[in-house]
Image 1 (cartoon, rainbow, N blue to C red):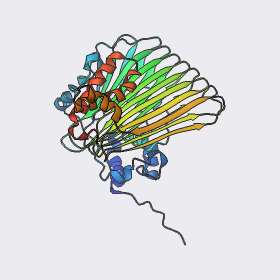
Image 2: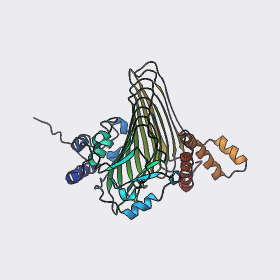
Image 3: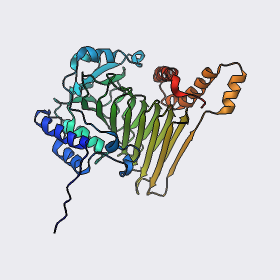
Image 4: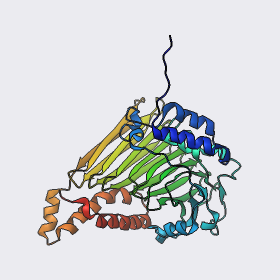
Amino acid sequence: MSADLSVVRTDAEAQILDHYKSAEAALPAVGTDRPAAIARFEATGLPHRRIESWKYTDLRKRVTTAFAPAGDADSASARALLSEDALDALNPVRLVIANGRFAADLSDLSDLGEGVSVADLTEASDAQGLSLAVAEGDVGLDLNLAFRTGGVVLTIADGVSVERPIEIVTVVTADAPVSSASHVGVRAGKGASALIIERYAGMDAAYQSNVSASYDLAEEAEIAVVRMQTESEAALHVGSTQAELAENARFNHLSVLVGSEIARDQTFVRFSGEHAHAGLRGINLSGKKQHIDKTLVVDHAVPNCDSRELYKTVVSGEATGIFQGKIVVRQHAQKTDAEMMSQALLLSEDAGFSNKPELEIYADDVVCAHGATCGELDEDLLFYLLSRGIPKAEAELMLVQAFLAEAVEEFDNRAVADALGTLVEQWLSARESMQIGG
């Protein structure tokens, strides 16, 4: 007698596998082991609440239809999305990925400078090594590996300091619901430095975007990243960032999550060399019925490294916010110095937020701490501003902006702080339904 152990799949899971079978032969070579990735997905299915790292974002329940992979993007629509850029004031060099493929005609490679090279992921000779193994086994990454159709490889030579910021814009545009998967790979040589801006946007309609980025920092490299997600409010966004830091490297990362109906943004950082630093910060803004999940894992795998994490979340309407952050300190990672803080502000009675900071420490000579808060606007501060003749709406906006400012200012780039401050102000002003103050 034998039991039937056949897997019961949801419609969306079955559609994902069908889409892969239909597209597999035409998918370009991008240095990934697609069969292994789709096999892992086939074994696990979409992530659900019984998987601890996806406990608060149950994609098996939320995703009822898997859209087919996107074809070529419409250039006019892509250009329109490129014009909506809050960080134009930084005068960046721009690289564009449209519907999962590097779009050279929409990019500007004329002023990258010496020592900086860009390659189409489908033509890169060494794409195999670009997907770091910092987050092996993650379902979101496996689906990206399986369906990845393109992207860019950015290489900065040893000792090169890139003067202009480099902006990598990923857009999705189509006449019907589609899915898109792409990858950004950045390699920074010894002593190299640069400011990278990742921006993700799309048409004002439903689509599914799965993107990944990897940052491989050699010794003494210093890379700052601004990751801005402003996808359509009907979109599903799954984004994964992996970073590996060699000795004395410095990695500063600021994420701004505003768009998508459902957004899962996950960051994985691993120290592989001593005396390295990671500064990870973020602002998450969600309203209406959005669901925004920020998940973070920092792996202190070697001694004498430090990390700082600070995330600020504002939740309004009937939205849901999530923060899951874990600091892992390996047994031999002595003299680790790590701090993590997540703070959330609820602007309506129907908004919800889940905070889950964790420390997993196996060494004994370390300084590690984490904290988490969640609350409403401070009534005493609000009364103070009102008593000085400031209108209530303006006073409330001032308090929200002050709450968020710390995360941006600690990024230590005045131009970025000013540009993002404007973005935050626009978001707050547009949210007439957020019902500040109850």
